[in-house]
Amino acid sequence: MRRTMTTVAILSVVCASSACGGGSSSSQATSAINSISGTVSGPPTSGVYVALTGASTAGTTTDANGNYTFTGLLNGRYTVTPSVSGYDFTPASMSVTVNGADMPGQNFTAVASTIAEFPVPTSHGGPAGIAAGPDGNLWFTELEGNQIGRITPSGTITEFAIPTSHSGPVGIAAGPDGNLWFTEFYADKIGCITPSGTITEFAIPSSGSEPHGIVAGPDGNLWFTEVLGNRIGSITPNGTITEYAIPTSSGNADAIAAGPDGNLWFTEYVANQIGKITPIGAITEFAITSGNEPHGIAAGPDGNLWFTEPSAGMVNQIGCITPSGTITEFAIPTSSSDPEGIVAGPDGNLWFAEQEGNQIGRITPSGTITEYAIPTSGSYPVGIAAGPDGNLWFTETYGNKIGRLPP
Image (cartoon, rainbow, N blue to C red):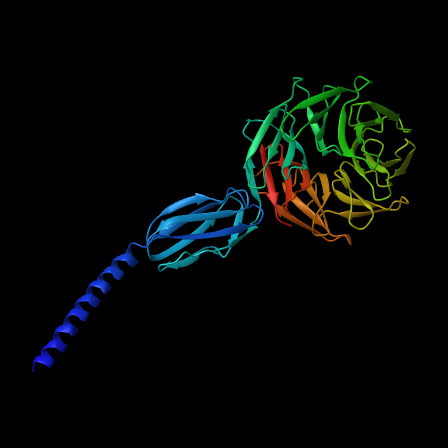
């Protein structure tokens, strides 16, 4: 009888101890402090807002490498949801259960949605030209705002005032020196802006030249067109300018592009010609028989040059010229769409802006055209560039916005 009582007493102590221990474990589980973390890959990666809902609510933004972390979390079920303007995410959100341990590896991938638009801070800025910069951002000119703008892939815009007032910045291009170079149409100057925003200006020797298009050449210099001056100019990174007269008088050179043949190619919208200039200044011109006032021009992925023709008897076209001078033209489905800027996209096609059509067009090397409507009506898209994020970026001169479109 004594032995039985002793056994019961021992069991009672063990159970009591177990109950206390069990109670302590439950308390510790409820108050456990853990984390949820992950990475957003894109672009964009940085600046993505990540919301946490469920057992508690919080919000944070990803760092420069796309990482995010929520700390101090109690056990429970949570939902993690990333968001940033103009992008969708895969997955759209994620359900995560915290149960006494950290939960790393909650990763998302950002994918550009349809056309996104970002307002330019300065009202009536009149964005015109646009180019991808060496810093991973897009840079654009503000014709009316007299500024150079910079926009990050996530849509943050910064503006830099040009020293010369009413300079009329139009074309812009990345230079071989790591800076951006732009034309000042009204001031007869070529400007240079560093990624940090420092601007230097160089006067063109010939007054009344009206510089317009600009591009980096294969010789390490920048090449530009002079609309009224009827010349092609070249400027070294240290500011030395050389000018070459176009054989056809009043050709009105507009846009310029570096060709796959080591030469520079440009449009003459009054003379209805496509011009070619070698790095030493020898010019050859090719007539467009349909007389369609060519404007924008870009090197294509097929080894040819592609250009826009806004005036083709109201049936505007996209033209293609081989390095030997053979021209082919393709009618744009939307009549009177007034195509302007054109660029090679990351998808192996050419993309162009339709000023009056209020659309962005895509043409394959075989000539198939697709058009995409811009959300803002009457936006008047002008410039277009392929961004470092794999998207197409364009200016909306009347809409005063910068647009982005995934290919």
